Image 1: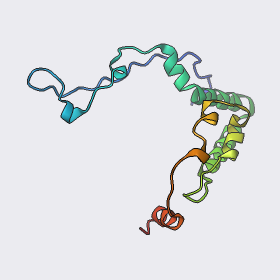
Image 2 (image 1 turned 45 degrees about the horizontal axis):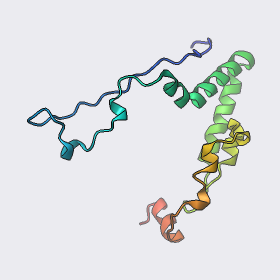
Image 3 (image 1 turned 30 degrees about the horizontal axis):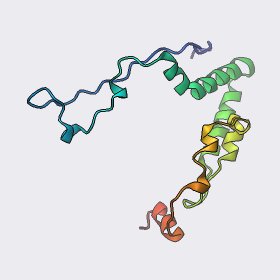
Length: 141
């Protein structure tokens, strides 16, 4: 087990290129593979794209390592256990959950981002019979 700090600099990752089944004239078969995504064919993305995509995970790993080095192994284990139990808490399948306990433990309750303004649960246009939704989640239907 290493007690050193995780690296702060992210390593640039190259997206995996998918091998397309080419047809007779070295053209990808659209009927088998679907339309290709132009952005996936870009060779190397900007290094900050990978860093920003993994920012929360890197910040959490750094905080847990700092806790382990300063307070001992019990502190990150206790926080990890609390986070795991907070992720399991939910409501009935037809009700949306605010995940307030999880946001409080991770510190997201004091931040405002685009996901807080857009994608509001009260604007979701899903409807269903509540009894049917619960029975389906229990495996009765």
